[in-house]
Length: 413
Ligand code: SAJ
Image 1 (cartoon, rainbow, N blue to C red):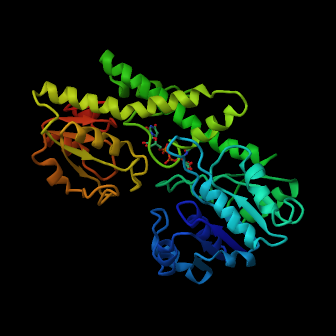
Image 2: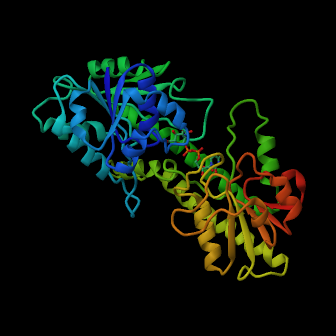
């Protein structure tokens, strides 16, 4: 088959490589020429896709900014970003413009699948009408379905191949067609009755995490006042062989999914006269965590007789979660900004983030960051970083991830 991918980022590129590895010709279309040029040179910019793997399928992979190439494809997968506006409302701009571009080249008999996370109804109410402006009817002249991406950055045990693929077609035959396509790269297909059910299942997955992370973060703010070790409490609760799922408190929730996706549903729910309290509350609690962490640092420095102003604080781990270099919505950035506003002299060490996108700060070596600091702040605990050494060598440590529990030399969240 000839497969088209619109948006060759952390979702589109793994799909492109997977289909090419199955012997299919793939056209990757992206508005960003830096991406298409890098792929043409065989350079991957997605951590989970090493360049050698990309180069191995270079003969089957065409990267271009020209959408015309999609007209020769049997199927087109749409994997463009679905961010929030500044007012935390869904921003379907990238999706609508990609769909308009696709409409200009859409051919009878093609299959179109939307993978971008979005609110229930997007495929049927926003994508289908734009494609049907061509005069072709969805479900009759072309097939249309929704199948949510489930990429978990940095994870290697579960991949596209062995993570069940949920999909919902606009019609039964749309679903059948999409299922036949994904069986090429996924071991298990989970059919649901409609695109709406598939759209909502994805949001439920991430809202489930957002709400549970918020719940444990709120309890961590309470145990901080009660003088109880939240980590000991979670370890104990996690011994329950059923009915409890472990989530860990932390500096807040980052990434491009969990801080974003829930608001797609809360916005949509308003059209049905329902305020999704859980989602809103979880958002508020998780947003508060950077402030709670900064007040913790202030208190710890104060106990050492030092003001934040002028203190040298070494931040360890600035990406949004361990093992990845992605700093989107990372709580570490908020914490550094808040501490900076209090006059702290901040340095950071992160083996995954050599420099920060929004200012000229660069990651210092482990020793340079640690030596001479008044306080070490562990925000994201990357594997391979010697957190015990931090606890041994820093005058005082605030550990937001509970990785130095055993050392008894650090102050936990
Ligand atoms: N976090 C906590 N405590 C926890 C777990 C996570 O504070 O117990 C924080 C992390 O530090 C991070 C944020 O939450 O800042 C999100 O991390 P994550 O690992 O929960 O999620 P993502 O955003 O990297 O990936 C999620 C995954 N969703 C689920 O596991 C249901 C991934 O599978 C999705 O594909 C991805 O969202 C997505 O693209 O939607």
